[in-house]
Amino acid sequence: MKIFFKCLINLFFILTLLIPSKSFATITDSASILTGKEFSELSGHIQQIEHKHGIKIEIVTQPTIHAKKIKEESKRLINRMTELPNSGENGNFLLLIVMDTRQYNAIADQKLEARLFDLNDNPKFNESKFLNALKKDDYVSGLTSYVDEIDSTLSNYPAAENNSNEFFDPFAAMIAIVGGIVIGFMYRSSLIASMSNVKPAIEASEYLDKENIKIIENRDNFLYTNISRRPKSQSSHGGGGNNGGGGHGGSF
Amino acid sequence: MADTSVSYKCPNCGAPLKFIPGHEKITCEHCDSEFEVSTIENLFRDKENMAVKTREAQEAKWATHEAGGEWSAEEEAALKAFTCSSCGAEIVCDENTMATECVYCGNPTMIPKRFDGMLKPDFVIPFKKNKQDAINSLKKFYEGKKLLPDAFTANNRVEAIQPMYVPFWLFDSEVEAHANFKAEKIRTRETPSEIIRETQIYNCTRGGIMKFEKIPVDGSKKMDDTYMESIEPFDYSELVPFSAAYLTGYLADKYDVDAESSVPRADKRVEQSSLNVLASTVNGFDSFIEESHAVIKDKGEVTYAMVPVWILTTRYEDKPYTFMMNGQTGKVVGSLPYDSGKAFKYPAICALIVMPIIYFIVKFLTL
Image 1 (cartoon, each protein chain N blue to C red):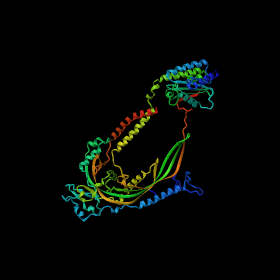
Image 2 (cartoon, rainbow over the protein chains, first blue to last red):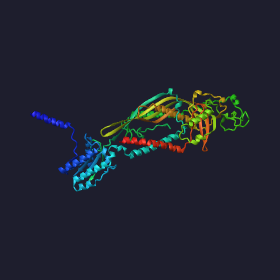
Image 3 (cartoon, each protein chain N blue to C red):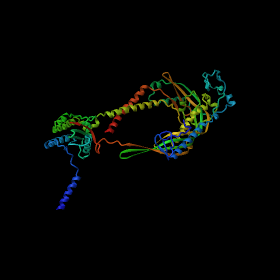
Image 4 (cartoon, each protein chain N blue to C red):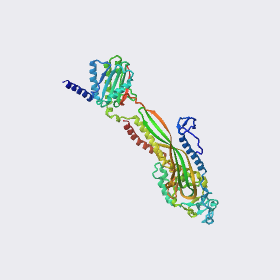
């Protein structure tokens, strides 16, 4: 009987390893800033927004992250999110709140960043309600207003969800204009050059007796070796992944 | 210009090299490169040899005195009056004209006094293309020139068409060329923390013997050198011994640039082609540059030939445009005017077509 239970326990242990880990928690409240009721109400609200937009939102509170930088830690966490099999189809968003330094950092992956942050990583939504609530230690109101702002921002950019490539791309336009002008000038130069075929003869290969060339000396002597070393550029993203996109943070 | 002396310089940075007593290697005090003594000895032995060869090359001469021959008494006798032998009118021409036609009766005329003291050509390439060929070839030359002003072709009339035998010096030479190239082999490898680029430097010594046959250099100041070089090449299989009979009916100039003065132009072309041949044998390297060279003429002969050229002149907006056609092969050379409006329009259309293509390519690549 003991052997049977041992086998049962081992089987359960192996199964827990084999089965893909459950989806990451919507809220990881390690700093315990939410009550149980607030936690479940906010989780339910977030799940509705996740379902509506096909995204994943994770809110993480930490009492401290010690010497780590909040941006690096946020990137590490969102990279972990994107690597999970049940990550958001249309993108992932993470809000990290660190209580000892009273700092927060919001970050979205590459799929979502253009919809939530501008080119300078400033949020496209209003954070004032969230910050005012956090300053008053009213965390549940702050977080609720934050996810509501994300919800309305994503609703205002529906076309971006699946057709982001249809937006006008100023970078591509600039390259196209410069490239077009350069090619135009090259074409103009070639057209003007084609108007004249008068050019000096700088060599006499047409008069060379090619069948009677004798190579009488052919030596290659090694002289020395130059070695140059260049350090590899380090990735600015935390963790092993590189899916972290734009982000924004501050203190409260 | 090739070096005729050698100074001992670091092959890496060019600073003067010194052998420091007590060291097994020669060290450059400037860049700290170290070289085996034997390596430096070999390198500079090559350079010393090259300097010696360069001095020899400068001393080598073309046998310019062998170009051309003397006019026979019969030939001089056959070249008749300075006045037209047909109508008696006086022939007006410049000091270099050997043959022309009478402006009054069109009779082909030789100017014998102009042959005094001058060399007789060794060869002549007879005209193969006639006046109509020249006009047709010029029209064909206009084809496909998108920037050609409409008024140029619409109102175009060839003002003058003249067939002329142009004096050319033909240089034969056999050369021994030597060159040193600095070549590089580049290898890049990566460690977890850095990218290491190793550049191996080699000194490549090349030498070769080659032969050039009849490099043409025009002997007329009146003819633009660049135009004359542009109508090349000539088919020398049709070169025939000179006879004054070939000049009748055509204009012909005697040379006013002698063979000796034409030598630098031939030498320059021989040198460049020899170096191209040697450079083509430097294989297996990522890049190389020529460091020094010497081209020694072992044999240099010059012959004097008359070459057929059609000269066509037209006018557009009061400016003359001259075209020249190789009277043997029919190759036309010249510079056409272009319409500034068209020079803006066509590139602008091209740019407008290309811009959206580039836009979508960039957008696709950055997705």
